[in-house]
Amino acid sequence: MHYLGRFFHLKKKLAFDGLYKSDEALVYPIESIFYPNKTGSPYSFNQLHPILFTNPSKIIGVGKNYKSHIKEFDSKIPSEPIIFLKSPSAVIGPSDKILLPKNIKGNIEYEGEVAIVIKKKAEKISEKNAPHYILGYTCANDITARELQKQDGQWTRAKGFKTFCPLGPWILPYEEFPRFQDLSLKTYVNNKLVQSTKTSAMLFNIPYLISFISQVMTLNPGDIILTGTPSGVGPLKANYNVEVEIEQIGSLINSVTNESKLIKNQLPQAKSEIVYKSKKSKNLIRKK
Ligand code: MG
Image (cartoon, rainbow, N blue to C red; front, side, top):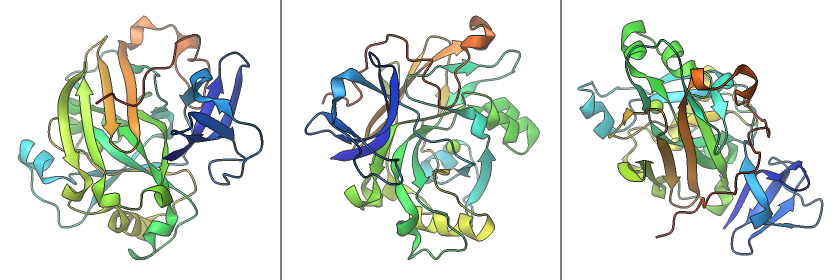
């Protein structure tokens, strides 16, 4: 398998876009994730940490896209996709911390999801052409303040807090795995399996969603579509670890902390490498 992403070299203090060949355990520097031509000699994967690879102009979420999740909320099956926007300032990368905001009532919950990364500008495209606009897939966690979601009647605040959109660890290119119905999604909280599904269980499939959203708004390179969560959502507490695993990709692992525990200049920033101090890279491919 090969993957596209952004990597940080601890010793060299260097961040670069890379093509990760997992069977060789090498990462080749490339021009960008959108133009993956090699620009230099490879680094050993062991010397690197994956970091956030995109700075999206927007994140489009899809609600109620798995029957199992609709059932657990006693909700109606929608006749068209329910879409919402998530703030780009919510994005964090692999191993960054999810912050539990202060003074928020109710649970802050995980939602493991398959994310689509958009390859090129898309406007009013057909379902048939939609796969040409997919750069690839990655793991996402659509963190949600559940009480606020119910209270507000729309979801902008509940899903928009800083750190509420972990993404990564890298992108599985569409060409590498065109069988978008065969992605297997699992979520673990403190190593316990809490969500499990196949993308074939989606109500509206990936090309349909891209086409549908592109009728409404322009999709730009690097934009993210969160394709919905299956049943099994639940609360996150301080010091929990949450892992979203997609079988062909690997795992997105984030720990949870109270916002008040971090001083201001330690807040994770989108695209930042500052959170990568000296932590040894976690094993991002789960051992079976
Ligand atoms: Mg969701």
